[in-house]
Length: 413
Image (tube, rainbow, N blue to C red; front, top):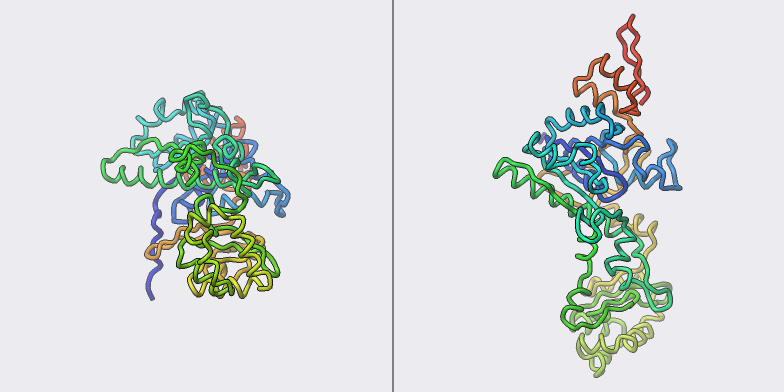
């Protein structure tokens, strides 16, 4: 019987000082590939614990559960010296620290990277996730996904003329920033393997949001024509849009003349590629409204399921526009193992798959300060120190009292 492969990041210790989305997503992905992630929450807890409904039986929002699987957690007030000492013990053998405080917050507490941590922990990879970076005209400003979508032009190219500029329906800026942070961390670890030193990694939602302007930024640089609202259509490709079939909408992603010809032959409209308006992609883009009308006329009597399956089998990318429950219930979602269950928790696994050193979904997301006692014990805190920490209020999850007769420490966690 072959032994279970060791996960790629096994042995990596990550201190997670993040809340909300981008940071917790980054550290959850690290955890799913073997890293030991210790999440330090503020006394009020991660904000996503309250972003509901829906809530679970313990009162935590489903939002939180999507981003914090496989972590151990405790709560500390890092503005207090007693909590800072706990953090330093955590960092004594840590490889990575990830934080998303407003710029200057850790410096105010004497915990800034260049100020205090770089010299003391020279091998530490320090990842800072911010809205706009620390300096510049918007430096230090708070940033949330939709604010960055608006600020960086994403909303201006999403939506249609009837509804106007529209937020993308998923937090795409936060999500991608989580991956940017993870990639930066892994690159910094690779550099540390080479030269023995850690470094600061920066991931800003602003930079991420601007990087998503593909191909709209390139189009603007080349043409100086302002991109506009196209609904679900593509500014450079046609037909690349949603279309109405007999029983619902389908999306066609046709990027070549050969695909367009195969599509037209299959739906019984072989003359469309010979129409002067549709003879090339550039012409189809110029006449996209007429093209959409012609395509919807050709598929008006076809059920979308069989139509899309048949098109895919002849090399024409097509899909029915599914709801979230339909997408999660699709047989291919099951085949790919995207939905994972840990006790009462159901969530989505990280999309990164390593075949030689596969990761796996960790334990269910932790309750607030759930692992306080265990983490502090592993850091070497004795009963007297635990009592002082509990009395200081620096570690809200610790309410310790010692039974002198039995030598037992009790804690509410």
